Length: 226
Image 1: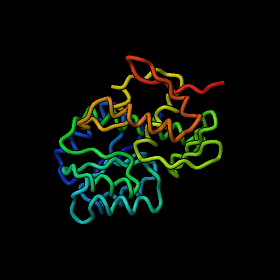
Image 2: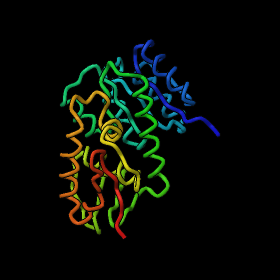
Image 3: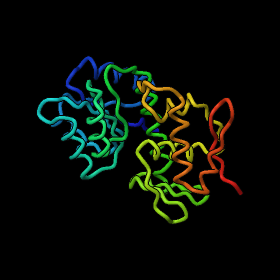
Image 4: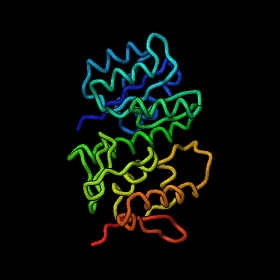
């Protein structure tokens, strides 16, 4: 089986090598680009690239420009790296279609875990594009959720949380596992933020919110009622 290709774009060669070494250790094939223009040349030349890890601050074309151009023709997952942790940057990234946002410095092991999680979710939804669970329909590509055919407006994190629940249907999930999978590793909060999001999510899902079961002292489990 061919190894999954990942394009790492960063003008710092030391950073590229660090990320490349960790990804290759996990069996991925890594392509490198030192600026945005080189990244686009590689991207157009190789349609087997399954994910981009993209730095924001780069010469020639910055990360935002690359992201905009990629999104004109492709829905390939994008992880954006930046030295800045400002909320406005993060919001801009999500508006442009970034799938994940990680601030430098970061743990390479956590980055690899995020890559694997995103690819796992992408592969889960690629087969049919839309995931359905007991009347809840999730269109990842369109970032759209419907309950019994009715559109439900969710925030970015509510959407990610619901997707994670549906993809792990029937599995007991600890708050720590949810936090690590749905929130960035550098999120300076605690597990109670999950409880707040679950409460909002249940409310927006109406009767279907009952699918999210509380496991006291541990976390949650998504279970469709017969």
